[in-house]
Image (cartoon, rainbow, N blue to C red):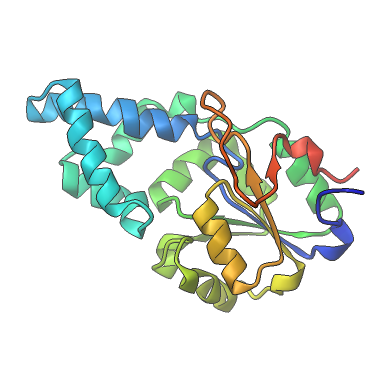
Length: 220
């Protein structure tokens, strides 16, 4: 028996960006390594001191829309976050088999929608680097809706701008809080990602089935 949803049961596919379609290594490197170096330089700290201070500040807003907001961190850290992302943009990478998957689900006439918490500035940079925008029928940014995907109200707001039937919708996301929120709203088909960061450890996805590769779910 196929452990994945039958494509005949799916009309709409909601896809996360960072950690799902794109390798999370870029974002982890950026926030955990690159920003601390630049923050230390700006504020006269050692890199270790900067890292400790930043970890505390990150934890205060993690899961809220501010966590994903370039403008918020630019103000908070007195750093040009958008410019710093450009400095390491060569690390932006698409996970293996993603393009093949996206083309295949378009070929069988599924509605393909990017649903991301990424700030518009980050989203623009990543689409410019990868060209993945050409595969989507629509791109929905949480900043335009005013709620992060972790928030239960997000999926109701999304339904207003992108009407969908939760029973025939598949969401693929590396964030377990997002999957849980979507589940609460009634989205029937949910998949996690086993290794969002190609250079990190395999993650525990609890009760959610996790993809090791998009080849596993690409329709033939």
